[in-house]
Length: 286
Length: 160
Image (tube, rainbow over all chains, first blue to last red; front, side, top):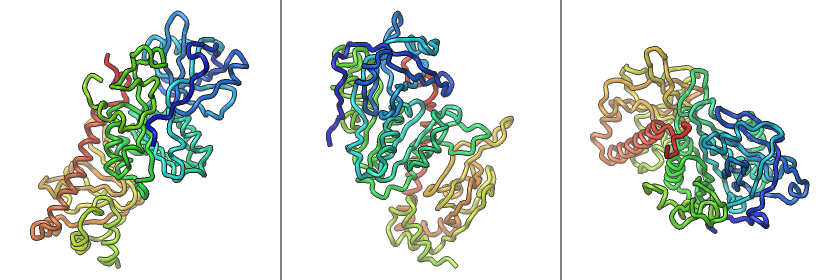
């Protein structure tokens, strides 16, 4: 199984398309989804992405930030990015309004290995805002449901109000994906699961672990323990994929800001096979 | 009437006991029974003695701790394959949390006295059982540590 799922970026990776904020959906505290549309219809027509890829959003006078795409690759019209306020660019984005325009470069990076999942069971394990980069994979898997075995989403958040996209869970379940959520800290009204997401994986029945693929996105500690749990349950390390986050600047592997051991996260990642990076995940300073 | 054979078959399918040698499962099935709980029923109560070890076969159990001023706070949810009320088995005097059935719960129950006696006289049961219990407690400990790390707090994974 190949270690990366690379996709070609647009012809000129430095070319920024102008995009306009068509609408904004407030998700949870400090997190919103920006539904963007291309100003140039030709750009809209030629643009396509694979689940797991990211764009560089460029706000003139502020800077540029790498943001994962969170919409359905098959969706026409708008391109969604779910963004948490974490720095200057995302802070400025949070102050933007519908109708504002800015630049977008991309798509960049590797994608979730959807083709490698064919015929087997797929478990998506994620936490917090990590669901955003996995949402395109969820749509893709559900759009092609008959090509896979069972589909399961295990999703953890700090508290019940931190769960992203809750209004979509019923639709995902109805279309064939089991959705299991858990929170670290329960509110009195919360009737769901309490505990970390790895516990959901620990107790999940795995009838065919050797044919099961895990797609994981979240804090690195969470991903490391998820992989440990999955391997302990018999899932091969080469069927576990993680999405890494680093300081991505150029997005094409030139500047070196996102280097992670021998890997450039912007070019070789963000989606990387676990066994290719596992030895670096617990190294202090990486 | 649940036969020892039926219980043995259930123990084979539960993660906690599935790795035990067949002879150990047979011996355990000989002292076990099944018990069901309806939603809201209490399996064990914080601070009180509990003389049975539960192995959850179906359903979910909330673990609650009483915090003055906050009432019962749910700290964890257990599900199929998890063990509950192991405190007495390792010599603790009372349960450290209250276990409440969150839906229809089915359990396999082991009386602590009989279980300890079995472990004492038969090391082919006692050693692998205590090893599985240690693994279960280790998983619970790692989960608690991950909760303590508060990984989803904004800024928790950033340098500054």
